[in-house]
Image 1 (cartoon, helix red, strand yellow):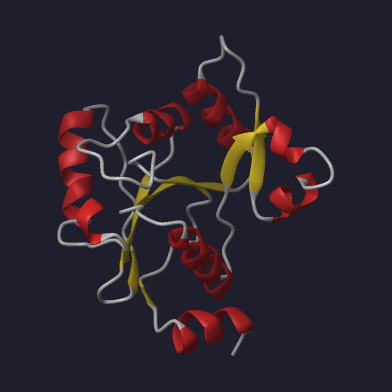
Image 2 (cartoon, helix red, strand yellow; image 1 turned 135 degrees about the vertical axis):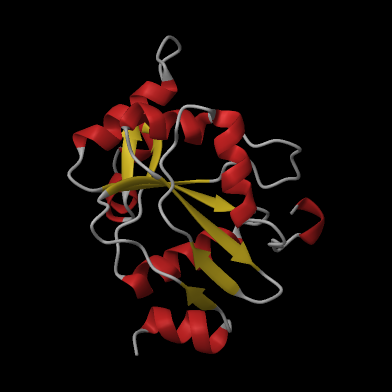
Length: 178
């Protein structure tokens, strides 16, 4: 048993339901509900247990010495966030440029309560021509669940209704924000 498994399962009492389709090398993972920084810690441990690369993007300044090596090691990719740059297309280009890249993103765009998801995750998946994989963090039952790949159709209204079904009844660490 590895250290990550010991911490995740034995100490914290969490379990993982499902796994990623290893034949899908590029995707956008929507992880919700995102209500706490602890979500990141759980996700990093789960990534280690599942032995799969999960990625993120960050402003290019994060990737300069001395911390740049760490962020790359954690699966990060630098993003040029210029004023006139289309960020959706810039992130899609990062995904396209890699052999393997699973972008983890919180559809809420924040750790506080929101009425509607941000739409960037959806348009990134469309522009990169990759599926969306839903991942839930359900704190009352201490379970991370990994869903099946969902291929966006271009009809965001219809597709988001389908994606949200996966998260129905899931409660985050801050239950009021779920």
